[in-house]
Image: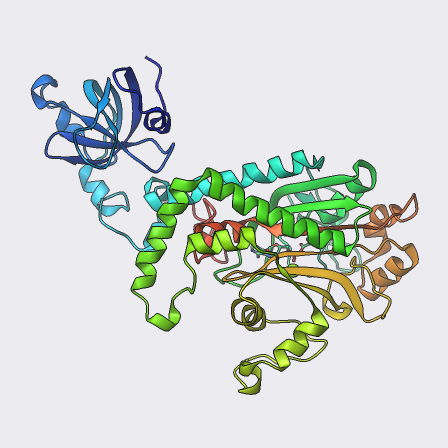
Length: 479
Ligand code: 4AD
Ligand code: MG
């Protein structure tokens, strides 16, 4: 008999039919009730066994973590907690779970800290929390493709190995196949990358934007969705060394259009999850409520997970220029009471404490800050007429900080060429990028959404390492 996913059995709740389900044992109570989970949904199915009818010794192998195949009739459940259950006719143990080993792992039935779970990333999928997180992650990824497809965007696969540093921050992982014990040097004593695999210096991409711009200048509306890599040595709860970025790029869009797209996109994705991942979000919500109740009152979230998601999906974001943001901050209580650690001054970048103040205290909703000083933004951002600011935008979310960073792009060749010089970007590295400004250049804009930061927001998880299956961060590349 073909297997049916447990989610389907529970959804249809059709009794009397015979089914085969396969999954892993979550618990085995009273020598009679097996809770089986196959990952298709949060809920387990209850399989009811009669020891008398089972071959001798078989049920001794039914321990937490074991993989089973169960065939039986779906009947209305006598117990509370589930509509239907399976009366087991045939049971097969596909893989035993050694009980002594299980005790040492996170799949033992007791509660484990999120940090302990992280140390066993190969097993944490088996927990309710991580099952829910990764189903939400999937649903968000699916919704992203759906959103763009509906809007006529083309999915563009930009390279993972590149020769350029799009962000100009120099935080790149090198790609080479040199024998590290014997790296060739030229006459000047510099590394001779001409002899390396690609005949030039290459690295893992920090962003697909520059290549996406090339696509947008022909296909009109494109987006990338792929892994990006940053060798920043910041081991924070919001940074990964390998993370996924979604980067739409649209020909003929200006900064206003870009802000509208970013807001519409985020609100759509959150609403989509509320509509399609109800059970998992409810579970994560309940989990958070339990955790929050153990914190001192002044440290608790003002809104519950469900409320936060509904609120963001339903309400417009605040839009504020950088200059206005500085004014608001300089008039704020924490500024006047000297509570901010970092200075608030026109021309310096906003720190996380400032962003959090604006989003969580001043406006209590997502905020888009635009028109930043050119001095600390990337070379490709369009220069505004004031000569001091660029048409940049950051979307800030409660509890997360920056979730999107983007801009209108500098489409004027002369200004862009000068910017390259100012930023010490050799023209021979970006000639192909500059070329788009020579052949029918046009205004265009785009942004990058940090996918894991979005998953954090939707799941309520507070550490970015817990929303990606196998996190990469300084001093850690296990699994
Ligand atoms: O602001 P960033 O650096 O922008 C870019 O890379 C542009 N090229 C995007 C574009 O305009 N197409 O990064 C974009 C987003 C940030 O807002 C943040 O959400 C996320 O990527 N991000 C990270 N997420 C996890 N770990 C890190 N180390 C991240 N660095 C950036
Ligand atoms: Mg940024």
